[in-house]
Length: 321
Image (tube, rainbow, N blue to C red; front, side):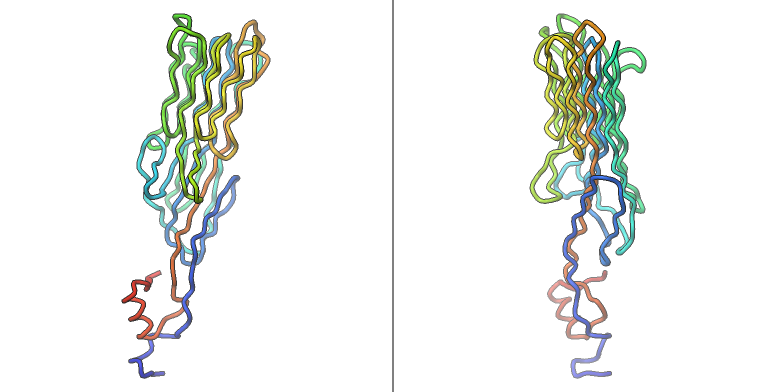
């Protein structure tokens, strides 16, 4: 059917406004994209690592790996934001939210924390964040575990390595010159603090990174704090859900667990002698996956007449979606 406007491109249906959609996954599930979505912004954080328990100075757990594509915001490890990821509108994509690693159990000797689990945004090119490294000590296995951010060392060991573009290394322990303390767990925004000096104290976990993907900025993925052998103030968890080291009170005190759905590392347990130790290291906090589907503006629900097409192209509101 012709018209005085110069012809019909197709049915002149009203356009559809697809608004911004933000979906937060605190546990594993499935993301089904809106009909006209072609790309996603994301924040993918893995589970944090568990902290150690030892009579010789315990390390804090490393934060879960932190990957972000939010423009203008950093990813973990000081990296710039990553590219958005392409998707198809109306399609299902699996989401995996990693659990935090367990803290070293209470008991005799030195106990290690376990590494957290990975989180995955299962788009056609999957986005995977590595679980935070568990805190370990000198012997078997040696040193803090590698992970998204590395676990802190205990006794005399080094901290674990962080993963490139996801997080920082854990801090090293020290057992000399009157200092007997573990290192803080690495965070997404900074290394865990290494033990130093000559007085007994714990050391802080590395700070996390702030994201405004849901609106106001929120810090996540901080490392866990460490503790000294007998006395002194325990280290604090890094800003972003890292657990504090356990208080020193002449007997083993439990470390604080990382905050759920932040990927924070667990806080170390006080290893005051004599053994057996009475409390466990803190567990890592579970991860989180947050997805933003940008506002697509007005999208044609059919095809438009020539005047409508011209007006929208001129206004910059025409879409190829």
